[in-house]
Image (tube, rainbow, N blue to C red):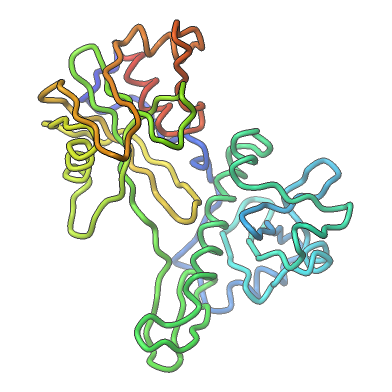
Length: 310
């Protein structure tokens, strides 16, 4: 039985995207203000150390997790640690690494998040934990002061709140929603290339959701603004946590009502691709050398699932 584009999928496509494989049990209903301290007191606690957009590995075997003693040796700022949750092996935390990435001892190696993802250095579950930890730590780093009164705030609830002692305001971690969409018309789909892309790479269009806007309307607006294409039906397909710094990519398909393209300054190129072209690009055999984003990207999932649905 073939998967039909505007019907509910038989599987969960989000499971195939990078950063989407997190298996940590968050147990959010059981968090308390001393959750981090209790987790650090557990001998089985494992920590991810992060700093400067990089994940710190033990050089031997490129192991991503550190014991409490190893974290202390790396001068991790344990007072700023956050509790990610629990696995059968014990609690999992993320903490800012205190060491300068340019002056690491031989026992440690710092690798930037994008390389960890692109090179497949850790498995899907650990990549998901990286996204959770990186996003939380980035939010805490940029929200140390109360946005209401300007006074310093403090961490609460294992890292999932900040509290301002001065005015008693609570602050919660933010996630920035971004729509990424593949517009389709019959047996063809719309792909574009931003100025920062390599000349051979084409991908789905994307843009931030604005305040007071539905996901569907954001998809329609961004597609019209970037490519001059009016969309009718819009359906959700998959999502992807994207820790740069705390974004959620929301993948959708849009039903194009016209095919004449008018691109704006955000795009360097944009055109329709038929299904056979897309399949050849996915296979790496496109006659013009067209490249689709790599398999961990949600754009790849949108493009591949559409191409294989025909």
